[in-house]
Structures are given as structure tokens and as C-alpha cells.
Image (cartoon, rainbow over all chains, first blue to last red; front, side):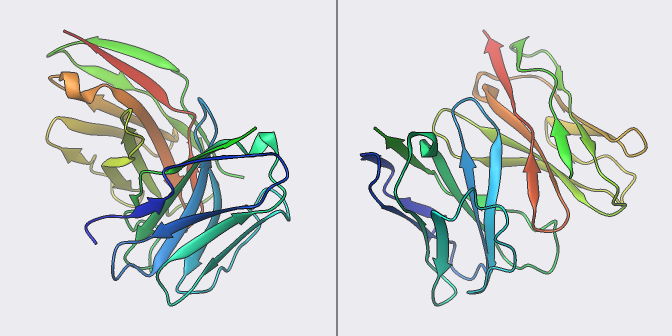
Length: 116
Length: 112
């Protein structure tokens, strides 16, 4: 695809429900990143994938958050038993390789999650 | 932990004038990368400019340039000949490696 795509663009859910957020990276990009942006705040790094593996999951806020990537492409961020403090914009980014920290990350448009 | 600080929550500039956005960071590493990203109301994060820490020469991209002071751990962004389309949130970011840290952002307003 031409860029990173994310779905849905907006998600409203009730407290306690599970949600799945999807990210489709740029074709050929091996690295994929998830961030959370709370209202008026900067970006909080959550997790990154190199291929299908996530070497460091320490950025995930709690054990209610999980992420997976299959086939080295699409990734899903799952939030179980959502809480109101989970309300934020969730951004996904991808880059060509993980060979260098300076690889430019290309961002998707984000998913705005609202937990009522 | 590495932190990135943007001390200016809001800035404004007159169209065609020059504005400088400040960013400082804290790290014990010697090799890292710094970025400025722009986020317009559409939410799409767009890379403005990047700087490799091992390069002494300041990066430039058309009207955008940086003043990278490694010893002072400072990385400011200068926008020359400001245009209405430059209005956005600007985020400074640091990475070493893969763990990218962002500042809280500076909201830039461009006045016609």
C-alpha cells in the first residue's frame, strides 16, 4: 500500500469490553511500532516488532494490553477489559529495517479509542 | 531513562517570518538519532527532519533546519519563511535504538 493504514479510525466502546486495533504497515517494512497518544500529550511508546517477534514488551501499560504480528505484516493491538484511562489515539508506525535506530518511521493516521 | 523536553507548549509566528522551536533531551548514549515530526489536525505524523548524533553538521530540509548541540543535548528546529501550512503540533523525538521517546509537543500557530 501507499502508506500505513489503521482500522478502525474511531472506536467507541463500553468500559469492560475488549477491543482490537489493526495496523497494516507499508509493504516490505520489517519493523512495526505501536504508540499511544493521550489528549494533549506526546507519544508513549508501547511495543515494537521485528518481523513477527516483539523483543521488548515492557512498554505495554498493563497485562490487559497485548499485541501480535502475523506473517511479518499486519499487527493487532488488543486491549482487554477496557478502562476509561485507555481512551487515547493509538498510532502505528513502520520502518524498513531494524538494523538501525535511525530508520525513519512512517506513521498511520491512528485509531481514536473512546471508552465510556 | 531517556527523556525529551519541549519547554514551549505553544508558539506563534507571522507568515513569512522565522520561528525556532526548542528541544532538549537526556541520554547517556553517544550514538543516537533525533527527529522532528509534525502532526497537523489530521493526526498524521509527518517526518520533518532527522539528525544523526555522530554527524556534527546540522541537518537541513528546505525551509527547515536544526541547531544540534550535542554537548548541551539540545536540538532546536528553525522554520524559515513560515507558511500557513506549517501550523501543527511539532514533536521532538529521540531514539536509541527502537525505543523512540517523544516530547510533549509544541503547538505552532501561523498568523496571516
